[in-house]
Image (cartoon, rainbow, N blue to C red; front, side):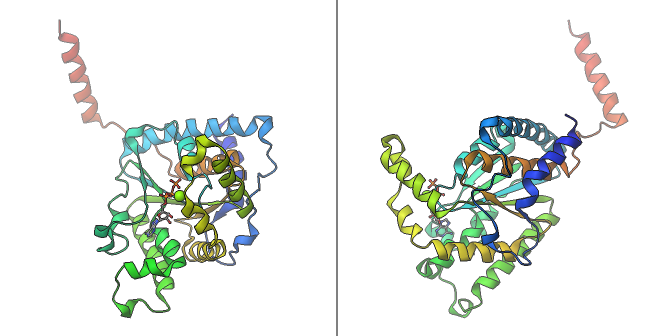
Length: 300
Ligand code: ATP
Ligand code: MG
């Protein structure tokens, strides 16, 4: 199938979930069970995903060779939404040397002693590379917003802890992403949109299956109690930071195979837009290459 046709097909699975402006955004307009009418049994999805990951591998090779752009993929979600497995599947074909995954958990004392962006900045991808954030600076307006005691641990001067703190943080994040864009960092943000009912099912599976027990943490059920607060914080974060240069994708997450498909499609589409190509070799470089070849050929 020609590239153009594949791209058109890809857009069918990305456009319904792509948020490039926060205007009128409502989380409730997005169904976690949506599959765009695709049926996994038909094998169509698996084939599309395979094609997407192969394509991504080719594009990554050029990204690396060009050494101009970098790609930052941000993954945010409630527990058990499938962040880890999505990252594993979508990146399965890419060269590990051109890709770095950073997972952000509770901050250390050293991290708490800095401004909130500090620990994320140190993990940004260098040119030519793909950086994956498994949780990200968005936790600073999600878990920190939901739990006031976490904000207290950040030891901000009281003058900056007022009622406007969340709007201000969101504005700082939006500015930060604008800055990164102008530095050649292409940003894509994925919210894996899991329903509360499906989360319960997945937790139950982890509890009932001894081989999956390790995945379960008691705190997961505690966090679940704050579901509505989290959804409110997600909605506010997406509305305030969705932009053409750093869009959000509200990815249906109740069906893992569909989650992977949408994420892979979104990445392929974004990278494709960069029109990457292998660097051109100049006439002087060609001469040098010819000389090197001649030298090798002369060897006994
Ligand atoms: P998994 O459960 O699949 O291992 P995870 O990303 O949920 O992956 P955990 O170790 O369970 O990893 O949880 C990390 C926890 O750290 C999450 O509850 C998250 O909200 C919390 N966290 C992340 N960033 C911050 C932050 N800046 N301040 C406080 N807590 C944070
Ligand atoms: Mg967890």
